[in-house]
Amino acid sequence: MNELRSADWYVGDDRNAYIHRAWMRRGLPASAFDGTRPHIAIANTASALVPCNMHLGEVARSVSDGIYEAGGIPLELPVMGLGETLVRPTAMLWRNLAAMQMEEMFRANPLDAVVLLGGCDKTVPALLMAAASVGLPALVVPGGPMLSGTFRGTPLGCGTDVWKLSEDVRGGDLTEKDFLASESSMIRSKGHCNTMGTASTMGLVAEALGMVLPGLAGTPAPDARLLEGAHASGRRIVEMVAEGLTPQKVITEGSVRNAIVALAAIGGSTNAVVHLLAIAGRLGLDISIDDFDRTGADVPLLVNLQPSGKHLMDDLFRAGGFLAVLREVRELLDPEAITVSGRPLADHLDEARIWDADVISARETPLQEKAGIAVLRGSLAPEGAIVKPAAATPALLQHRGPALVFDSIEDFRSRIDDPELEVDEDTVLILRGCGPKGYPGMPEVANMPLPRKLLERGVRDMVRICDGRMSGTAYGTVVLHVSPEAADGGPLAQVRTGDTIVLDVEQRRLDVEVDPAELAARTPDAATVEGFATPARGWQRLYIDHVTSASLGADLDVLTGASGPDVHRESH
Ligand code: FES
Ligand code: MG
Image (cartoon, rainbow, N blue to C red; front, side):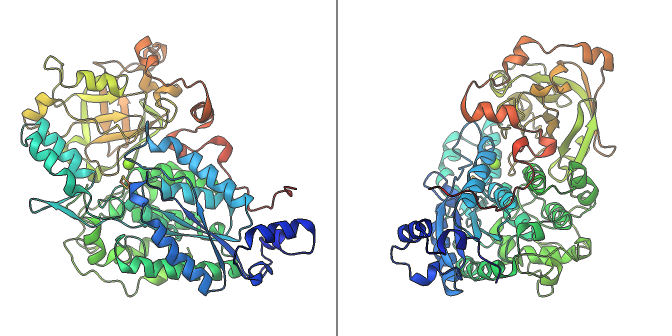
């Protein structure tokens, strides 16, 4: 056993060791403080305002039992959680704050390891960023997706079907009464969104990164096997302390590439790009936005889940689960990249099987040949923008059309349904001021609803371009994360309604057909600048001053790079 970090607090005959032990005893046996039993935090993002994570207290108890059984001391630590559907202006504004809070509490306390409990979109990324920066042994227990709800006999996909049903109302295909009647069927059980949105994606991506016991991610929240896996994770983290198995040894360039392969094969959320870049940035790994294209672009889509396909997370689990997907792309995985099990990820795939080929396709019969994220560059996005071809309309992936520009989401909402608006299906809708600095926090508004008059004519997709993000549950031909963002000097601020926009995904280009000198000479007008956030104080001020661009992961510049688990100076 390595010397325990917590022993620095608890072992010794001096006054301070006395203080640390005395206040912590409260029924714990003396052996808890003899320097042989690792103290392990169960970092819990549950709260009544994070509905997708509400059940994590129950998961924490199973983790706790496993830790105690294996000789460790479990310590539940409530950490900042973020309810994706509730917090405004966007949960993303606080991903970095949550990660910073967790990092500081992991380091400040007498801890030897951490178990990370997350679920809802930003919670797993924040936990991983924190754990990567602190460098104590860590593993994730993903809270799991909810069971599939149904409305009038048809399964409802969280998020995806909200967008779809609301477009049906606007297009006149569904009454408002029926739309509202579906509301109580949407969320059937505890757990996070059941589509391949950001929460599902990040749980699986965390496993591909090596940070989850293989086979556990994607287990539905109400399934008894989640608690069994939580118990096993509690036992395993105690062994990991003895082995000194830290995130630095698990999250490597190889494991991030495994995560990128997995992201493509599952048809995962575009939000995983900013999260993985931020996690890699915490470890100083040589990973850039271009790795998503290089490593992921040719990976086939194997999972038929909403929003790209039809099924839901419960179906994926029943059909063989994530390991059955990884087995199909095994030769694309780094054979050396280990997981928290201590063994390579690739070694865990032998027993995996596909039980329902309508949900998981074999490599030979993919749903799409090339499913990865495409990274575009050009005069409109010098530092990159992304598009997910699997969620787009193939005919629109090569497109030329006139820009219709909106300076804010409010501007967009006030004009989009105006019958007089000059717009047709060739128009390219552009929304700016929605990047990390501009909003602030980079909200999920890029999947702009289509103009009502076009919906009524049966148009269901158009090219849309934005410096913000889109919900992982959304779909369409949407170019996202345009960098630099408009509020940070990006050319998106200089585009005008009527300029010709050229999208060519095959050539990886996104251009505005305006003479470069003319484009550079244009100064953003007052309405454009008014759309940019100008917070004067508090977190939002700090955030704007320090957030990096989406193409770098939108972390704070002062948080990139790991600083390790060093023990701080004494408090008394
Ligand atoms: Fe929490 Fe979708 S809102 S996972
Ligand atoms: Mg979201």
